[in-house]
Image (tube, rainbow, N blue to C red; front, side):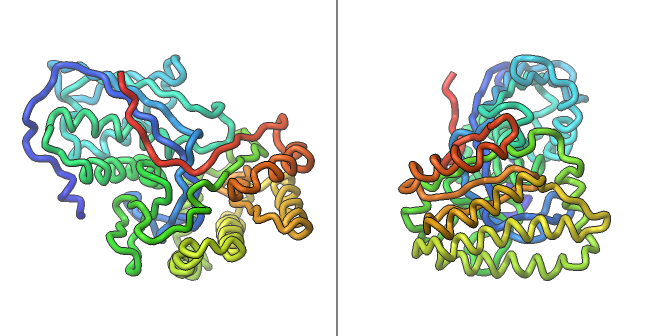
Length: 361
């Protein structure tokens, strides 16, 4: 599909008002996306586990209005007005208007909330933009009832990407790949796809316990970090590595080879942060506690042979990945060894999920 496939024809009807609600999960990348081109095009392909309980629920109420010159919306987060979110939403609406041209015909009330604590260090832009995009696509499906399900999901992912790149991986589940790769059929820079190859059952119930090392605002945003890949001395090698790792991951996922999975996933996480530390200006998002946790994971894995590993997003928090079959012993390890390194002893237990769901009104 190209951008032209997401331009709608004439709408068949325009309802006066209504309300839609969607719940969209966060995701955690295994092969990382870092570096992008305009507009929201990834410099390298990526793949992620869709999560289950870390999610954003968004309702959009819409009311037909007489004036169709300007965007009109109210935004409530956790039941309260959130004006500091509005500029980002306005930028998003401006960016997607030609693909959903009904936007100026309505006044929208956007109500959104997260299942995880606000400022907990879990990036909510992916789940938030995915949920909002699904709501807008739900409204478009009312304006154009002939819209088929495949185009609905692809366009929701396409729109979500224009709000936050990784949001395009939060529409479906349980493994989503994003970015053009010649060895992955139907892969695209424009939207995420469900991973098309065989995946061993061990990965279908994988667990992700998120250790909340630091819940404050990052000193360097992901948007800035992506831009710093332009002219980065190691950028081209990094992009080639990501393509290669996706090829390598195909056999690992098919066979359930946890030893090789661990090597690749941890290497990807550390490479992501190496790019930050070698950009100009350079920066470090890991905290001392992040390194303490990583070293304890390595020691625990060496001593017990338990197939547990870590990955990192663009921040200090540690995602602890492991098969459901070892959950009991890993939870004991967390309580005995890792919780002391978490801010206020906080962590969130999650697992691989199946993607976004519509909430019936």
